[in-house]
Structures are given as C-alpha cells and as structure tokens.
Image (cartoon, rainbow, N blue to C red):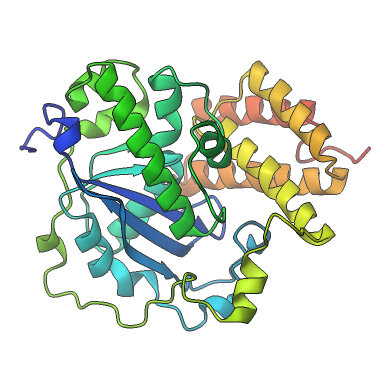
Length: 336
C-alpha cells in the first residue's frame, strides 16, 4: 500500500486510518502536555474501533480544566506519556493519521515522539480542512461539522468521544471523495495545497520502532468512570446548570478561536463571525480577555520554542494582535 515514497500513490479506500484526539494543558508542546489521548482505527471494510484511550499525567499542573474537565486529581495515578509510547505507536502502526484540526494534535505528537527518540512523523490529513477541500463547507468547530453531517458527538472534549465522532466524519468524507472520483492520496492533494498534503511523502510508523517497550498496565479511561466522575464530566442537554452553561460558552468561543488561527492567520470574515459568536454567547469582557491572552501567549510560546523569532513570525503576531483587538481586547490593552 505504501512505499519508500510515502502514500501519494496509495488508494485512499484501502488505507487504514488512525483518528487521534488529544486533550492538553494548553497550546504549546514542550511547555504544555497531553492530559488525555485516544486512537480510533478505521480499517477498510470495518467499523471504527477505539483501540487506545487513557488520561495522561502531564508532569505539571493540568490547567485548561474549564475546557476538558480533567483535574490534577484525575491524572495523579494516570500513566506518563513515556509509559504509553509503545501502546501508541503500535496503535498507529501502518496507518495514515487523521484528526479534526490535525495541526494541533500533530505538533504534540511530533514533540512527544521526538522526546522518546522517534524521528518519524507519519502521513496525516486534517478532517477540519476536508470540508472546504471537498466543497462541503467552510472550516468550523467539530461540533458544528457533526451537526451539519448528522454525526453524533456524545460529549465534546472527552478525547474518545471526539475521536469517535471524527471517525464518523471521516466515513462521510470518504463517501464524498468516492463520488468525486478521488482514488489516491495524490488525487486528494491536487484539490488544494494545504500544508498537511506534504506529509503524503512520509512513511508509516511501525511497531518495530517500539520493539521491547512494554504494554502500559495502568491505563485510565474516562469511559470507565465512577458515578462521581461521570456527574462532573458529562452533563445532559436536558438540564444544564448556570455554571455549565457558562463553561460551554467559554469552550464554544475558544474552539472558534482555535479554528480561526489553525493556519496562523485570521481573515476579516473570521473576525466578523467571531464577533457575532461572542455577542451571541454573552461572554463577559473578563472571560474574553482571558481567552485572548491564552491564545496569544500560546502562539508566542510556539514561535519562541526554537529560541528564534523571525520577521515572518513577528508579522503573524502583529496581525493576530490587531484581530484580537478588533474582537474586544488584545494583550497589553487597558480594560474598557
């Protein structure tokens, strides 16, 4: 199916795909860490199968609990990422990777694999960008894509639920590709020149890379929770308390911000849409400032990770500062 020249000539429908989803402490690999990971394999002719799911001890304060609901207490007895490297690589072995907003997940995966001495980054593609790529609509948060395509997502920001929902979206997109006459990954790459298509030249991860690494014995999945944890992490749509409604508003706006900056640019159209969303959600100024500060600091952390800040990165930061200011506040501005 693949060769030394990657997957460009491989048949899309014959390719095993591993859909990944990570919950993290923030946006910056190295400084931030993974607190939950899930892998759903979609093998040709088979239903999506959850093959790996666990919370992860990031070795630092969790943070971002308002997004994913995971606390320091939840992960204190969860495995460290290094304990999971063998399990993860075996789960991804022989697969093309996919994720909703792959640019977020792949940078964390690359950092953690490099830390474990694995320098191979597998071929991958982005389910968020597949919508405009296939002419199905614009980029949007996962929840909105699921609603549009009638895909169930039982609990956003629980990694297993987001990965399973993303795997169902993959099946929708594969059906659309087939109707468009797309056969190979090379055909897909010719539709639009998104950055991820460059990875089609890469080769798969293989189990031989982790030969001798043991299987982790203390996985801790949120799918097997005590009643107390279940109440804390999952709230039904029928009765949403005020604090949960406020949290969902924060998460909604945060996800929209992440979608807008996935390619490190924010268009005028995206600014208008974000402004409408912020007004509709009724977020207090203080919460908007917090999210803007979190986003801006996360991008800065990414840029200075190599101890270098070039002119291109400065221009991106300047544009992002201007956009956040138009949305109500940018770091350094006085409150209204």
